[in-house]
Amino acid sequence: MNIWQVYKTTIIKNCSGNSAQLHGLPYWSNRLFATMMLYLFPLFLFALVPGVYMSIATNLYNLAFFDVFIVISIAASALLPGLSIRVRKAWFIGLLYTLAIGLLYYLGWYGPGLVYLLAITLFCLLIFHGEYPFFTVYVNTAICISVGICIHFHLLKNGISLQYTLGSWVAVSVNLVILCAVMAILLPMLFNGLQQSNNRYETVARATTDTIWDWDIANDAILYNYGMREIFGHQLNEVKNVSKWFKDKLHPTDLDLIIKQINKALKNGDTLLQLSYRFLCANGQYKHVFDRAFIVRAPATGTPIRVIGAMQDITRQKEEEQWLRITESALRYATDAVVIVEAEPNSMQQRKIVYVNEAFTYITGYSQQEVTETFIDILWGANNPLPDTGELIDTFERNGPFEVEVVNYKKNGERYWSSKSVSPVRDNTGKTTHWISIERDVTQLKEHISAVEKQNIQLKEIAWTQAHIVRAPVARIMGLADLLGDLLNHDPDATELVKFITVSALELDNIVREIIKKSE
Image (cartoon, rainbow, N blue to C red):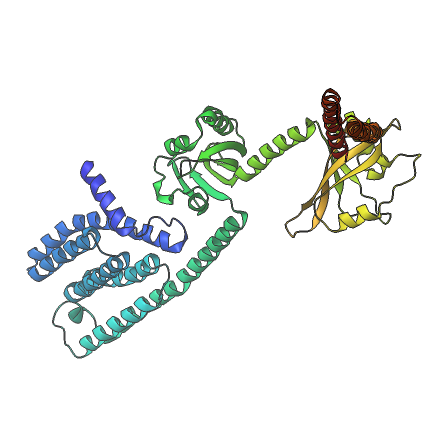
């Protein structure tokens, strides 16, 4: 058993070509060639024993040696490493031609020479998937003409030359060539139809960006299209044990649930199957997958035999949904009001509200249902004159973000100041589709600022009044001190007293000047 497994593995490896490409006629022709070589060599070996025995018994020692050489050469074409798939195929066909000609020469109609010539045409059409379909027809025709010439001029002394007349050979060879030509015409038509169907399948598969898969339940084999490699990074030839491979790629959290859903669908007679799970990529990351499948069942028993499905990568959709949930939560519970309006105004330059959050309701008193699909003008108040919106309209038309403070009115008619930070939302073409306004009630801030400004004005007035009123008597004191100093110039005590009065007046004057400077 181990010898057969090693032999099988070697043949499949050598004769399957590029196993990374698991679709199309080239792949299937290579698979067919590998299977052909896998079983032909044991069959040739089995037929070699009686063939050699009969050749030796009839004194055809050259034929016995020839048979052994052909079988060894066929084995070498399949087992020798390092050869390309096309070289192996050409070598194999060449050996078959050699075998057919040798059998014609030695055995004539007693041997399968003509059968081999017909079989070579069929083999070439299959393993070369219809390339150069009439090549073997031409070669067989040339062989038949050459044999006919040899029969006519008695150039051969064995086998076929003794069994056929020229007329009988022409009749036989014409039928052979006609059969070869019919196969060369019909089989390429079949191959072309299969190739077109495969091309349509590949085109649809690529257009949908889905990974198409076909699971043969009985043989536990699965085929994927190129999406498995291009989307998930796995090579198509790495899938061996399907059940184990698939389980290894499922996220551990999803494994039990997905396996239960699959088994339940297979047992309950369902024909449709939908799954949502995380699938492990070749780079070690998981992608979210939505998998839709059709279960093919045996008509008589209803036993599931195949499952054909399409894996859709919805990772970006899942991430966008998650981001939308986060964004919606942030908007809903934000302390600032969020208002989203359409960018395109109507004929009255009014823009429709499409969304407001809970903070907007808290500030204005309007619920989301009351303002959705209405115009932003509702905040200007029903009984109040509309403000001059010309400057605001010009700002919108520039399609850039801006900040503005305006007076709005609540549902109960209360007036309040709103500070708005407005930004455009653009589509893929750069066109503005909506405006998002982040709004805050700044009424208390405005009132506080107004109160502070009034207080500052009052303080400036007080400072100015104090400075100018106080400085006048200070100036008079300084003048009087100068006069008193001149009168009491000869009295030392009086002079010292006047000096103290002058210094104090100067200090008071400097203080008044500082007050004036700060008030300015």
